Length: 132
Image 1: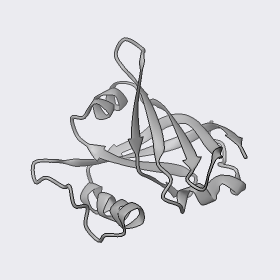
Image 2: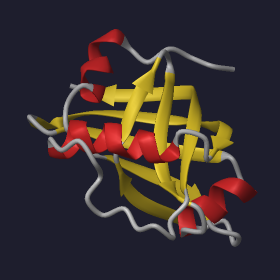
Image 3: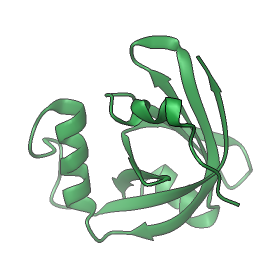
């Protein structure tokens, strides 16, 4: 069941705050990657490349967790646990450009490779914990 992100932590999505995304490996062990993210309503959007470790894990097991630390105060953070409810390559390239604008201040993601297929994950929030 979806829950709301607390209003007092939504500002983290306006900052250049990296999220640490945890997915589950086939053996159940965690795999963690730093990612850029954005908030769309009450769902979290993450962008990656088809075939990466996290992509394979998410396609097999939709359960994920994110920890987002405030870049202005490392003792203030938001933890999100949820599930990926939508996976699409539609808008993937535009999505990484939008995130590059937020995180790098550039109009186009500078590390895009023509052979990469960008993928967008929409995460439904099922639980939050926070500090600060």
